Image (tube, rainbow, N blue to C red):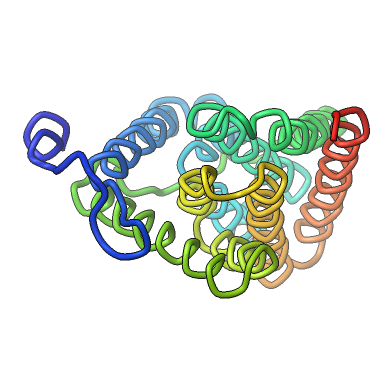
Length: 270
């Protein structure tokens, strides 16, 4: 993927609507897979021995949605306590917030303050909720969450990620061209329901064509919709205890994120 496929890819934009630099997209896909692989190895090595929080935090490096589904199923089947597994799902979401902030800081530094203020504020609230919730139920024993993931370094995994990012980049340009800013924000929200990383990358690739605030708003709309999708998943699979805790923590995180970006906008010039 790195030493054979990458050098063979053309380092120029290809395709309609300004095209997509396939080499750049492939490189980003490999880097994202590497980050996910760190979480994959951590879950394999430390998940059962270190407990639910460490396993779900590492799982958040791979997919916070998968963590939410796995924990909700355990609660619904009576294999684990919502008091521990819900905070684990919330912590995985906090990790996904940090991932978005890091991606934006690397790929579009001009948006780092706007997006980081919201995502990091939300991550802080979610992390505090997770650790406080576990601390208050420290006497309750529960099995560590057993998370099952595919290896993120599988060739088809990386290829699928690269293709999805390329498609979303073109879709974002098309939405902006047809519907302007509102269409782009709505499109980012729809993209975020399925893959927040691919949505973030696609929006950062449009930054040269967009005002900073519009691009930041689109990314945050995708993050918010992704958070909402996990709340819906939790509520459908394990509504009692687990779903309510995930919903409460997610709502608090979103409020904190809105407050964070509002504070930045209030004190920023222009």
